[in-house]
Image 1: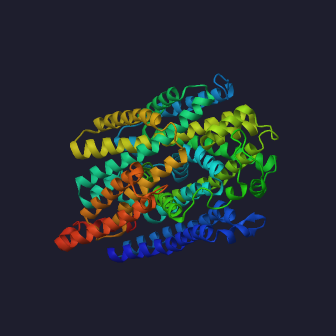
Image 2: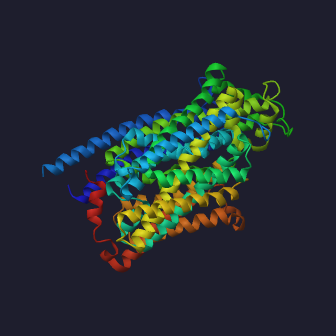
Image 3: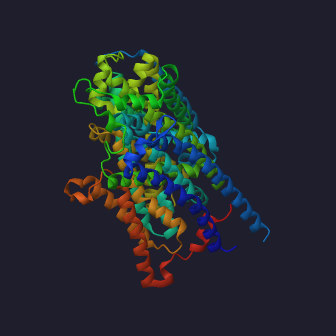
Length: 87
Length: 522
Protein backbone atom coordinates (compact mmCIF):
# COMPACT_ATOMS: atom_id res chain seq x y z
CA UNK A 1 0.00 0.00 0.00
CA UNK A 2 1.46 3.38 -0.94
CA UNK A 3 1.75 6.24 1.54
CA UNK A 4 -1.15 8.23 0.13
CA UNK A 5 -3.51 5.24 0.35
CA UNK A 6 -2.31 4.59 3.88
CA UNK A 7 -2.99 8.18 4.94
CA UNK A 8 -6.43 8.18 3.31
CA UNK A 9 -7.34 4.88 4.95
CA UNK A 10 -6.34 6.18 8.41
CA UNK A 11 -8.10 9.51 7.84
CA UNK A 12 -11.29 7.85 6.63
CA UNK A 13 -11.24 5.63 9.69
CA UNK A 14 -10.72 8.55 12.12
CA UNK A 15 -13.39 10.68 10.43
CA UNK A 16 -15.78 7.72 10.36
CA UNK A 17 -15.84 7.91 14.15
CA UNK A 18 -15.11 11.63 14.54
CA UNK A 19 -17.78 13.20 12.33
CA UNK A 20 -20.78 11.35 13.81
CA UNK A 21 -19.42 11.78 17.34
CA UNK A 22 -18.80 15.52 17.11
CA UNK A 23 -22.13 15.98 15.28
CA UNK A 24 -23.78 14.21 18.24
CA UNK A 25 -21.94 16.43 20.74
CA UNK A 26 -22.73 19.69 18.95
CA UNK A 27 -26.26 18.37 18.32
CA UNK A 28 -26.82 17.98 22.06
CA UNK A 29 -25.90 21.62 22.60
CA UNK A 30 -27.87 22.92 19.64
CA UNK A 31 -30.89 20.95 20.82
CA UNK A 32 -30.46 22.19 24.37
CA UNK A 33 -30.14 25.86 23.47
CA UNK A 34 -32.38 26.09 20.38
CA UNK A 35 -35.22 23.90 21.67
CA UNK A 36 -34.83 24.93 25.30
CA UNK A 37 -38.53 24.85 26.21
CA UNK A 38 -39.06 21.41 24.75
CA UNK A 39 -35.86 19.89 26.18
CA UNK A 40 -36.41 21.18 29.68
CA UNK A 41 -39.95 19.81 29.72
CA UNK A 42 -38.82 16.25 28.88
CA UNK A 43 -37.75 13.74 31.50
CA UNK A 44 -35.71 10.54 31.44
CA UNK A 45 -36.80 8.68 34.54
CA UNK A 46 -37.23 11.66 36.77
CA UNK A 47 -34.20 13.57 35.47
CA UNK A 48 -34.68 16.52 33.08
CA UNK A 49 -33.53 15.57 29.56
CA UNK A 50 -30.96 18.39 29.26
CA UNK A 51 -29.20 17.27 32.46
CA UNK A 52 -29.41 13.65 31.40
CA UNK A 53 -27.71 14.41 28.08
CA UNK A 54 -25.05 16.92 29.17
CA UNK A 55 -24.22 15.85 32.71
CA UNK A 56 -24.55 12.11 32.43
CA UNK A 57 -25.16 10.10 29.28
CA UNK A 58 -22.39 11.62 27.16
CA UNK A 59 -19.78 9.86 29.32
CA UNK A 60 -20.78 6.19 28.93
CA UNK A 61 -21.55 6.73 25.24
CA UNK A 62 -18.06 8.14 24.69
CA UNK A 63 -16.43 5.30 26.62
CA UNK A 64 -18.17 2.60 24.61
CA UNK A 65 -17.60 4.26 21.22
CA UNK A 66 -13.92 4.91 21.79
CA UNK A 67 -13.05 1.59 23.37
CA UNK A 68 -14.36 0.11 20.13
CA UNK A 69 -12.38 2.70 18.15
CA UNK A 70 -9.09 1.89 19.86
CA UNK A 71 -9.58 -1.85 19.38
CA UNK A 72 -10.36 -1.42 15.68
CA UNK A 73 -7.55 1.12 15.17
CA UNK A 74 -4.96 -1.13 16.76
CA UNK A 75 -6.27 -4.13 14.83
CA UNK A 76 -6.03 -2.15 11.58
CA UNK A 77 -2.48 -1.19 12.44
CA UNK A 78 -1.52 -4.83 13.10
CA UNK A 79 -2.98 -5.78 9.74
CA UNK A 80 -1.04 -3.04 8.00
CA UNK A 81 2.12 -4.19 9.72
CA UNK A 82 1.53 -7.74 8.51
CA UNK A 83 0.90 -6.55 4.97
CA UNK A 84 4.06 -4.45 5.04
CA UNK A 85 6.23 -7.28 6.39
CA UNK A 86 4.91 -9.84 3.88
CA UNK A 87 5.68 -7.54 1.03
CA UNK B 1 -12.75 30.43 58.32
CA UNK B 2 -11.23 33.47 60.02
CA UNK B 3 -7.51 34.17 59.98
CA UNK B 4 -5.75 32.14 62.59
CA UNK B 5 -8.25 29.28 62.43
CA UNK B 6 -6.22 26.12 63.01
CA UNK B 7 -6.51 23.12 60.77
CA UNK B 8 -4.03 20.63 62.22
CA UNK B 9 -5.26 17.65 60.23
CA UNK B 10 -4.99 19.61 57.00
CA UNK B 11 -1.47 20.69 57.87
CA UNK B 12 -0.47 17.11 58.76
CA UNK B 13 -1.87 15.75 55.51
CA UNK B 14 -0.05 18.36 53.49
CA UNK B 15 3.22 17.68 55.26
CA UNK B 16 2.76 13.94 54.64
CA UNK B 17 2.05 14.58 50.98
CA UNK B 18 5.10 16.80 50.60
CA UNK B 19 7.34 14.21 52.25
CA UNK B 20 6.07 11.56 49.82
CA UNK B 21 6.78 13.82 46.85
CA UNK B 22 10.23 14.69 48.17
CA UNK B 23 11.19 11.01 48.55
CA UNK B 24 10.00 10.24 45.01
CA UNK B 25 11.76 13.27 43.57
CA UNK B 26 15.07 12.60 45.30
CA UNK B 27 14.99 8.99 44.21
CA UNK B 28 14.34 9.99 40.58
CA UNK B 29 17.15 12.56 40.65
CA UNK B 30 19.65 9.74 41.01
CA UNK B 31 18.58 7.90 37.86
CA UNK B 32 18.46 10.74 35.32
CA UNK B 33 21.35 10.50 32.93
CA UNK B 34 20.09 12.05 29.70
CA UNK B 35 17.81 14.90 28.63
CA UNK B 36 15.31 12.28 27.35
CA UNK B 37 15.15 10.96 30.94
CA UNK B 38 14.48 14.48 32.15
CA UNK B 39 11.86 15.53 29.58
CA UNK B 40 10.27 12.17 28.67
CA UNK B 41 10.97 9.74 31.52
CA UNK B 42 13.05 7.67 29.09
CA UNK B 43 9.91 7.04 26.95
CA UNK B 44 9.01 3.94 28.98
CA UNK B 45 5.97 4.84 31.06
CA UNK B 46 3.23 2.19 31.05
CA UNK B 47 -0.30 3.14 29.89
CA UNK B 48 -2.10 3.03 33.24
CA UNK B 49 0.57 4.98 35.13
CA UNK B 50 0.80 7.43 32.27
CA UNK B 51 -3.01 7.77 32.16
CA UNK B 52 -3.12 8.54 35.89
CA UNK B 53 -0.32 11.06 35.42
CA UNK B 54 -2.01 12.64 32.38
CA UNK B 55 -5.33 12.81 34.24
CA UNK B 56 -3.52 14.45 37.12
CA UNK B 57 -1.82 16.88 34.73
CA UNK B 58 -5.20 17.64 33.19
CA UNK B 59 -7.35 17.80 36.33
CA UNK B 60 -5.95 21.08 37.41
CA UNK B 61 -7.29 23.57 39.90
CA UNK B 62 -9.79 24.42 37.14
CA UNK B 63 -11.26 20.95 37.25
CA UNK B 64 -10.86 20.27 40.94
CA UNK B 65 -12.02 23.64 42.24
CA UNK B 66 -13.33 25.38 39.12
CA UNK B 67 -15.82 22.92 37.59
CA UNK B 68 -17.79 22.53 40.81
CA UNK B 69 -17.35 26.28 41.38
CA UNK B 70 -18.74 27.24 38.00
CA UNK B 71 -21.65 24.78 38.42
CA UNK B 72 -22.29 26.37 41.84
CA UNK B 73 -22.29 29.86 40.29
CA UNK B 74 -23.89 29.31 36.89
CA UNK B 75 -26.06 26.20 37.33
CA UNK B 76 -26.70 24.08 34.25
CA UNK B 77 -24.64 26.38 31.99
CA UNK B 78 -21.56 25.77 34.13
CA UNK B 79 -21.62 22.06 33.25
CA UNK B 80 -20.35 22.98 29.77
CA UNK B 81 -16.84 23.09 31.27
CA UNK B 82 -16.97 19.49 32.52
CA UNK B 83 -18.52 18.37 29.23
CA UNK B 84 -16.02 20.26 27.06
CA UNK B 85 -12.93 19.29 29.06
CA UNK B 86 -13.97 15.64 28.72
CA UNK B 87 -14.85 15.69 25.03
CA UNK B 88 -11.53 17.41 24.32
CA UNK B 89 -9.74 14.12 24.75
CA UNK B 90 -11.62 12.57 21.86
CA UNK B 91 -10.13 15.00 19.33
CA UNK B 92 -6.72 14.17 20.74
CA UNK B 93 -7.36 10.43 20.45
CA UNK B 94 -8.78 10.55 16.93
CA UNK B 95 -6.40 12.91 15.23
CA UNK B 96 -3.17 13.41 17.13
CA UNK B 97 -2.13 10.95 19.87
CA UNK B 98 -0.85 8.02 17.85
CA UNK B 99 0.70 9.91 14.85
CA UNK B 100 2.52 12.33 17.15
CA UNK B 101 3.97 9.49 19.19
CA UNK B 102 5.12 7.73 16.03
CA UNK B 103 6.80 10.92 14.85
CA UNK B 104 8.86 10.62 18.02
CA UNK B 105 9.85 14.19 18.82
CA UNK B 106 9.97 15.91 22.18
CA UNK B 107 7.67 18.90 21.80
CA UNK B 108 5.14 20.69 19.58
CA UNK B 109 7.81 23.10 18.24
CA UNK B 110 9.85 19.99 17.37
CA UNK B 111 6.95 18.73 15.29
CA UNK B 112 6.34 21.95 13.35
CA UNK B 113 10.03 22.50 12.79
CA UNK B 114 10.75 18.97 11.56
CA UNK B 115 7.59 18.69 9.48
CA UNK B 116 8.19 21.99 7.65
CA UNK B 117 11.97 22.43 8.07
CA UNK B 118 11.53 25.91 9.42
CA UNK B 119 13.33 27.56 12.32
CA UNK B 120 10.77 30.36 12.21
CA UNK B 121 7.97 27.83 12.79
CA UNK B 122 9.95 26.39 15.72
CA UNK B 123 10.35 29.83 17.30
CA UNK B 124 6.62 30.55 16.84
CA UNK B 125 5.91 27.16 18.37
CA UNK B 126 7.99 28.11 21.41
CA UNK B 127 6.09 31.41 21.73
CA UNK B 128 2.82 29.48 21.48
CA UNK B 129 3.88 26.98 24.17
CA UNK B 130 4.83 29.79 26.52
CA UNK B 131 1.65 31.78 25.77
CA UNK B 132 -0.66 28.81 26.43
CA UNK B 133 1.26 27.47 29.41
CA UNK B 134 1.64 30.76 31.25
CA UNK B 135 -2.05 31.55 30.70
CA UNK B 136 -2.78 28.10 32.15
CA UNK B 137 -0.42 28.56 35.05
CA UNK B 138 -2.02 31.79 36.30
CA UNK B 139 -5.32 30.19 37.43
CA UNK B 140 -3.44 27.31 39.05
CA UNK B 141 -1.51 29.76 41.18
CA UNK B 142 -4.77 31.58 41.90
CA UNK B 143 -6.38 28.35 43.14
CA UNK B 144 -3.35 27.51 45.23
CA UNK B 145 -3.14 30.98 46.73
CA UNK B 146 -6.83 31.15 47.61
CA UNK B 147 -7.19 27.71 49.12
CA UNK B 148 -3.88 27.51 50.91
CA UNK B 149 -4.07 31.12 51.99
CA UNK B 150 -7.49 30.75 53.56
CA UNK B 151 -7.11 27.30 55.01
CA UNK B 152 -3.67 27.68 56.46
CA UNK B 153 -4.20 31.28 57.51
CA UNK B 154 -1.57 32.47 55.05
CA UNK B 155 -1.70 35.76 53.20
CA UNK B 156 -2.52 35.26 49.46
CA UNK B 157 0.79 36.56 48.17
CA UNK B 158 2.83 34.62 50.72
CA UNK B 159 0.97 31.42 49.75
CA UNK B 160 1.78 32.06 46.06
CA UNK B 161 5.50 32.48 46.78
CA UNK B 162 5.68 29.37 48.99
CA UNK B 163 3.85 27.18 46.47
CA UNK B 164 5.89 28.43 43.50
CA UNK B 165 9.12 27.63 45.34
CA UNK B 166 7.96 24.13 46.34
CA UNK B 167 6.81 23.20 42.83
CA UNK B 168 9.91 24.64 41.19
CA UNK B 169 12.16 22.71 43.52
CA UNK B 170 10.60 19.35 42.94
CA UNK B 171 10.25 19.66 39.15
CA UNK B 172 13.76 20.98 38.60
CA UNK B 173 15.19 18.11 40.63
CA UNK B 174 12.86 15.24 39.65
CA UNK B 175 12.29 15.91 35.91
CA UNK B 176 9.56 14.06 34.00
CA UNK B 177 10.05 10.71 35.77
CA UNK B 178 9.75 12.22 39.23
CA UNK B 179 6.86 14.34 38.01
CA UNK B 180 5.08 11.31 36.50
CA UNK B 181 5.24 9.24 39.69
CA UNK B 182 4.25 12.22 41.82
CA UNK B 183 1.33 12.85 39.47
CA UNK B 184 0.21 9.24 39.82
CA UNK B 185 -0.06 9.73 43.60
CA UNK B 186 -1.61 13.17 43.16
CA UNK B 187 -4.30 11.88 40.80
CA UNK B 188 -5.58 9.35 43.30
CA UNK B 189 -5.57 11.94 46.08
CA UNK B 190 -7.68 14.25 43.89
CA UNK B 191 -9.97 11.55 42.60
CA UNK B 192 -10.50 10.15 46.10
CA UNK B 193 -11.36 13.60 47.42
CA UNK B 194 -13.97 14.28 44.73
CA UNK B 195 -15.38 10.78 45.12
CA UNK B 196 -15.90 11.33 48.86
CA UNK B 197 -17.46 14.75 48.26
CA UNK B 198 -20.06 13.14 46.01
CA UNK B 199 -20.41 9.89 47.95
CA UNK B 200 -21.41 11.50 51.25
CA UNK B 201 -24.35 13.61 49.95
CA UNK B 202 -25.45 11.00 47.42
CA UNK B 203 -25.22 7.78 49.43
CA UNK B 204 -25.22 8.84 53.07
CA UNK B 205 -27.53 11.87 52.88
CA UNK B 206 -29.56 10.44 50.00
CA UNK B 207 -29.54 13.56 47.79
CA UNK B 208 -29.93 12.28 44.25
CA UNK B 209 -29.04 14.54 41.31
CA UNK B 210 -32.74 14.74 40.44
CA UNK B 211 -33.72 15.70 44.00
CA UNK B 212 -31.18 18.50 43.99
CA UNK B 213 -32.27 19.83 40.59
CA UNK B 214 -35.92 19.78 41.63
CA UNK B 215 -35.18 21.47 44.95
CA UNK B 216 -33.17 24.22 43.25
CA UNK B 217 -35.83 24.70 40.58
CA UNK B 218 -38.64 25.10 43.08
CA UNK B 219 -36.66 27.18 45.59
CA UNK B 220 -38.36 30.44 46.49
CA UNK B 221 -36.42 32.97 48.44
CA UNK B 222 -33.24 34.94 48.41
CA UNK B 223 -29.55 34.15 48.71
CA UNK B 224 -28.01 34.38 52.18
CA UNK B 225 -26.20 37.65 52.94
CA UNK B 226 -26.77 39.42 49.60
CA UNK B 227 -30.59 39.01 49.86
CA UNK B 228 -30.76 38.81 46.08
CA UNK B 229 -33.69 36.73 44.84
CA UNK B 230 -32.48 33.35 43.61
CA UNK B 231 -34.03 32.43 40.24
CA UNK B 232 -34.08 28.65 40.64
CA UNK B 233 -36.07 28.00 37.46
CA UNK B 234 -33.51 29.85 35.32
CA UNK B 235 -30.51 28.40 37.22
CA UNK B 236 -31.30 24.82 36.16
CA UNK B 237 -32.12 25.77 32.58
CA UNK B 238 -29.89 26.54 29.59
CA UNK B 239 -29.27 30.27 29.11
CA UNK B 240 -28.80 31.37 32.74
CA UNK B 241 -25.21 32.43 32.02
CA UNK B 242 -24.52 31.54 28.36
CA UNK B 243 -27.13 33.86 26.94
CA UNK B 244 -26.46 33.41 23.23
CA UNK B 245 -25.57 30.61 20.88
CA UNK B 246 -22.49 32.42 19.51
CA UNK B 247 -20.81 32.43 22.94
CA UNK B 248 -21.91 28.90 23.74
CA UNK B 249 -20.54 27.39 20.52
CA UNK B 250 -17.27 29.31 20.63
CA UNK B 251 -16.66 28.20 24.23
CA UNK B 252 -17.64 24.61 23.44
CA UNK B 253 -15.30 24.46 20.42
CA UNK B 254 -12.44 25.94 22.49
CA UNK B 255 -12.92 23.30 25.17
CA UNK B 256 -13.42 20.48 22.65
CA UNK B 257 -10.29 21.21 20.63
CA UNK B 258 -8.16 23.04 23.18
CA UNK B 259 -7.13 19.83 24.93
CA UNK B 260 -5.59 18.63 21.68
CA UNK B 261 -3.37 21.72 21.65
CA UNK B 262 -2.21 21.80 25.26
CA UNK B 263 1.59 21.44 25.22
CA UNK B 264 1.85 19.86 28.68
CA UNK B 265 -0.67 17.16 27.68
CA UNK B 266 0.79 16.55 24.22
CA UNK B 267 4.32 16.10 25.56
CA UNK B 268 3.05 13.25 27.75
CA UNK B 269 2.24 11.12 24.71
CA UNK B 270 5.94 11.03 23.88
CA UNK B 271 6.51 9.21 27.17
CA UNK B 272 4.55 6.13 25.99
CA UNK B 273 6.52 3.31 24.36
CA UNK B 274 4.62 3.44 21.01
CA UNK B 275 1.54 4.71 19.13
CA UNK B 276 -0.70 1.82 20.22
CA UNK B 277 0.16 2.49 23.84
CA UNK B 278 -0.67 6.17 23.25
CA UNK B 279 -4.21 5.18 22.19
CA UNK B 280 -4.65 2.86 25.18
CA UNK B 281 -3.49 5.67 27.42
CA UNK B 282 -6.21 8.01 26.12
CA UNK B 283 -8.90 5.41 26.81
CA UNK B 284 -7.77 5.06 30.43
CA UNK B 285 -7.73 8.85 30.70
CA UNK B 286 -11.28 9.08 29.31
CA UNK B 287 -12.49 6.57 31.91
CA UNK B 288 -10.76 8.29 34.82
CA UNK B 289 -11.63 11.89 34.01
CA UNK B 290 -15.15 10.96 32.86
CA UNK B 291 -16.08 9.70 36.32
CA UNK B 292 -14.53 12.82 37.82
CA UNK B 293 -16.54 15.13 35.53
CA UNK B 294 -19.83 13.38 36.34
CA UNK B 295 -19.16 13.97 40.04
CA UNK B 296 -17.89 17.54 40.19
CA UNK B 297 -20.91 19.45 38.70
CA UNK B 298 -23.12 17.39 41.04
CA UNK B 299 -21.02 18.59 43.99
CA UNK B 300 -21.38 22.20 42.76
CA UNK B 301 -25.17 21.85 42.65
CA UNK B 302 -25.27 20.24 46.10
CA UNK B 303 -23.26 23.12 47.56
CA UNK B 304 -25.70 25.62 46.00
CA UNK B 305 -28.60 23.64 47.56
CA UNK B 306 -26.97 23.75 51.00
CA UNK B 307 -26.00 27.42 50.65
CA UNK B 308 -29.54 28.54 49.82
CA UNK B 309 -30.79 26.98 53.05
CA UNK B 310 -27.72 27.85 55.08
CA UNK B 311 -29.55 28.40 58.36
CA UNK B 312 -31.83 25.39 58.27
CA UNK B 313 -29.05 23.10 57.03
CA UNK B 314 -26.56 24.22 59.63
CA UNK B 315 -23.97 25.77 57.31
CA UNK B 316 -21.68 27.71 59.62
CA UNK B 317 -21.40 31.50 59.17
CA UNK B 318 -17.77 31.42 58.02
CA UNK B 319 -18.53 28.82 55.32
CA UNK B 320 -21.55 30.88 54.23
CA UNK B 321 -19.22 33.87 53.99
CA UNK B 322 -16.77 31.95 51.84
CA UNK B 323 -19.51 30.99 49.42
CA UNK B 324 -20.96 34.49 49.32
CA UNK B 325 -17.58 36.10 48.68
CA UNK B 326 -15.73 33.50 46.61
CA UNK B 327 -18.06 30.55 45.94
CA UNK B 328 -16.80 30.40 42.35
CA UNK B 329 -13.44 29.09 43.62
CA UNK B 330 -14.22 27.71 47.09
CA UNK B 331 -17.34 25.55 46.65
CA UNK B 332 -15.24 22.36 46.90
CA UNK B 333 -13.45 23.12 50.20
CA UNK B 334 -16.77 24.26 51.65
CA UNK B 335 -18.32 20.93 50.64
CA UNK B 336 -15.42 19.15 52.34
CA UNK B 337 -15.80 21.06 55.56
CA UNK B 338 -19.61 20.84 55.61
CA UNK B 339 -19.93 17.12 54.85
CA UNK B 340 -16.84 15.74 56.54
CA UNK B 341 -15.53 18.27 59.04
CA UNK B 342 -11.80 18.72 59.44
CA UNK B 343 -10.89 15.28 58.14
CA UNK B 344 -12.61 15.67 54.77
CA UNK B 345 -11.53 19.30 54.58
CA UNK B 346 -7.95 18.10 55.05
CA UNK B 347 -8.35 15.50 52.30
CA UNK B 348 -9.91 18.09 49.97
CA UNK B 349 -7.16 20.60 50.61
CA UNK B 350 -4.61 17.88 49.91
CA UNK B 351 -6.54 17.19 46.67
CA UNK B 352 -6.49 20.86 45.69
CA UNK B 353 -2.82 21.08 46.48
CA UNK B 354 -2.17 17.93 44.43
CA UNK B 355 -4.19 19.39 41.52
CA UNK B 356 -2.14 22.57 41.45
CA UNK B 357 1.16 20.82 42.01
CA UNK B 358 0.69 18.25 39.27
CA UNK B 359 -0.56 20.67 36.64
CA UNK B 360 2.01 23.37 37.29
CA UNK B 361 4.69 20.69 37.28
CA UNK B 362 3.49 19.54 33.83
CA UNK B 363 3.42 23.13 32.59
CA UNK B 364 6.93 23.78 33.87
CA UNK B 365 8.23 20.67 32.10
CA UNK B 366 6.52 21.73 28.84
CA UNK B 367 7.88 25.29 29.05
CA UNK B 368 11.34 24.08 30.05
CA UNK B 369 11.27 21.80 27.00
CA UNK B 370 10.30 24.72 24.78
CA UNK B 371 13.04 26.98 26.12
CA UNK B 372 15.80 24.50 26.89
CA UNK B 373 15.33 21.96 24.10
CA UNK B 374 13.67 23.96 21.30
CA UNK B 375 15.30 27.33 21.71
CA UNK B 376 18.66 26.96 23.45
CA UNK B 377 19.71 23.58 22.07
CA UNK B 378 18.04 23.38 18.65
CA UNK B 379 18.31 27.02 17.59
CA UNK B 380 21.47 28.25 19.32
CA UNK B 381 23.64 25.24 20.09
CA UNK B 382 22.69 21.91 18.47
CA UNK B 383 26.01 20.34 19.49
CA UNK B 384 25.59 20.96 23.19
CA UNK B 385 26.82 17.97 25.28
CA UNK B 386 24.17 15.85 27.01
CA UNK B 387 25.22 16.85 30.52
CA UNK B 388 24.80 20.55 29.68
CA UNK B 389 21.36 19.85 28.19
CA UNK B 390 20.13 18.43 31.50
CA UNK B 391 21.55 21.50 33.26
CA UNK B 392 19.77 23.82 30.79
CA UNK B 393 16.53 21.89 31.41
CA UNK B 394 16.88 22.45 35.15
CA UNK B 395 17.70 26.15 34.81
CA UNK B 396 14.71 26.65 32.45
CA UNK B 397 12.43 24.84 34.93
CA UNK B 398 13.55 27.13 37.75
CA UNK B 399 13.01 30.26 35.63
CA UNK B 400 9.50 29.22 34.54
CA UNK B 401 8.54 28.13 38.05
CA UNK B 402 9.47 31.53 39.41
CA UNK B 403 7.42 33.29 36.71
CA UNK B 404 4.41 31.65 38.44
CA UNK B 405 4.80 34.18 41.27
CA UNK B 406 3.92 37.38 39.34
CA UNK B 407 1.31 35.42 37.37
CA UNK B 408 -0.37 34.38 40.61
CA UNK B 409 -0.34 37.97 41.84
CA UNK B 410 -1.93 39.22 38.61
CA UNK B 411 -4.74 36.62 38.68
CA UNK B 412 -5.86 37.32 42.23
CA UNK B 413 -9.42 38.49 41.46
CA UNK B 414 -10.30 36.21 38.56
CA UNK B 415 -12.34 32.99 38.24
CA UNK B 416 -10.29 29.80 37.84
CA UNK B 417 -12.46 27.92 35.32
CA UNK B 418 -12.96 30.96 33.08
CA UNK B 419 -9.22 31.71 33.00
CA UNK B 420 -8.39 28.11 32.14
CA UNK B 421 -11.08 28.26 29.45
CA UNK B 422 -9.10 31.11 27.90
CA UNK B 423 -5.90 29.03 27.96
CA UNK B 424 -7.89 26.36 26.10
CA UNK B 425 -8.93 29.04 23.59
CA UNK B 426 -5.29 29.84 22.83
CA UNK B 427 -4.38 26.15 22.58
CA UNK B 428 -7.34 25.38 20.31
CA UNK B 429 -6.54 28.24 17.97
CA UNK B 430 -2.72 28.08 17.99
CA UNK B 431 -1.73 24.41 18.04
CA UNK B 432 -4.72 22.26 17.13
CA UNK B 433 -5.10 23.59 13.55
CA UNK B 434 -1.36 23.34 12.79
CA UNK B 435 -1.01 19.87 14.27
CA UNK B 436 -4.19 18.45 12.73
CA UNK B 437 -3.47 19.85 9.25
CA UNK B 438 0.26 19.08 9.52
CA UNK B 439 -0.48 15.45 10.30
CA UNK B 440 -3.30 14.86 7.85
CA UNK B 441 -2.79 17.25 4.90
CA UNK B 442 0.36 16.55 2.91
CA UNK B 443 -0.10 19.67 0.76
CA UNK B 444 0.35 21.97 3.74
CA UNK B 445 3.33 24.29 3.31
CA UNK B 446 5.76 26.11 5.57
CA UNK B 447 4.02 29.47 5.03
CA UNK B 448 0.68 27.83 5.78
CA UNK B 449 2.05 26.59 9.12
CA UNK B 450 3.52 29.99 9.99
CA UNK B 451 0.26 31.75 9.03
CA UNK B 452 -1.74 29.32 11.18
CA UNK B 453 0.52 29.80 14.21
CA UNK B 454 0.53 33.59 13.80
CA UNK B 455 -3.26 33.74 13.40
CA UNK B 456 -3.73 31.66 16.53
CA UNK B 457 -1.27 33.61 18.67
CA UNK B 458 -2.17 37.13 17.48
CA UNK B 459 -5.90 36.43 17.10
CA UNK B 460 -6.23 35.06 20.65
CA UNK B 461 -4.06 37.84 22.04
CA UNK B 462 -6.27 40.54 20.47
CA UNK B 463 -9.59 38.85 21.25
CA UNK B 464 -8.74 38.06 24.87
CA UNK B 465 -6.57 40.95 26.01
CA UNK B 466 -7.98 43.60 23.64
CA UNK B 467 -11.61 42.56 24.09
CA UNK B 468 -12.73 45.96 25.36
CA UNK B 469 -11.60 47.66 22.11
CA UNK B 470 -13.52 45.31 19.78
CA UNK B 471 -17.04 45.81 18.36
CA UNK B 472 -19.80 43.78 20.05
CA UNK B 473 -20.05 41.33 17.13
CA UNK B 474 -16.43 40.30 17.72
CA UNK B 475 -16.53 39.92 21.49
CA UNK B 476 -16.90 36.45 22.94
CA UNK B 477 -16.93 35.07 26.47
CA UNK B 478 -14.36 32.67 25.03
CA UNK B 479 -13.08 33.38 21.49
CA UNK B 480 -11.39 29.97 21.03
CA UNK B 481 -13.82 28.50 18.51
CA UNK B 482 -13.84 31.65 16.38
CA UNK B 483 -10.05 32.09 16.23
CA UNK B 484 -9.55 28.36 15.63
CA UNK B 485 -11.68 28.57 12.48
CA UNK B 486 -9.64 31.60 11.33
CA UNK B 487 -6.40 29.66 11.92
CA UNK B 488 -7.65 26.70 9.83
CA UNK B 489 -8.63 29.14 7.07
CA UNK B 490 -5.22 30.88 7.24
CA UNK B 491 -3.38 27.54 6.89
CA UNK B 492 -5.46 26.56 3.89
CA UNK B 493 -5.25 29.91 2.10
CA UNK B 494 -1.51 30.46 2.64
CA UNK B 495 -0.64 26.88 1.68
CA UNK B 496 -2.63 27.19 -1.56
CA UNK B 497 -1.06 30.57 -2.24
CA UNK B 498 2.48 29.29 -1.72
CA UNK B 499 1.74 26.27 -3.88
CA UNK B 500 0.40 28.50 -6.67
CA UNK B 501 3.68 30.45 -6.65
CA UNK B 502 6.25 27.69 -6.17
CA UNK B 503 4.37 24.58 -7.31
CA UNK B 504 5.90 21.31 -5.97
CA UNK B 505 8.81 23.21 -4.40
CA UNK B 506 6.36 24.60 -1.85
CA UNK B 507 5.81 21.12 -0.38
CA UNK B 508 8.57 19.77 1.91
CA UNK B 509 10.68 17.26 -0.05
CA UNK B 510 10.40 14.53 2.56
CA UNK B 511 6.61 14.76 2.90
CA UNK B 512 6.08 11.15 1.81
CA UNK B 513 8.56 9.78 4.34
CA UNK B 514 6.97 11.90 7.08
CA UNK B 515 3.44 10.73 6.15
CA UNK B 516 4.67 7.11 6.15
CA UNK B 517 6.01 7.54 9.69
CA UNK B 518 2.87 9.34 10.92
CA UNK B 519 0.34 6.93 9.44
CA UNK B 520 2.17 3.70 8.81
CA UNK B 521 2.56 0.76 11.19
CA UNK B 522 5.40 0.90 13.72
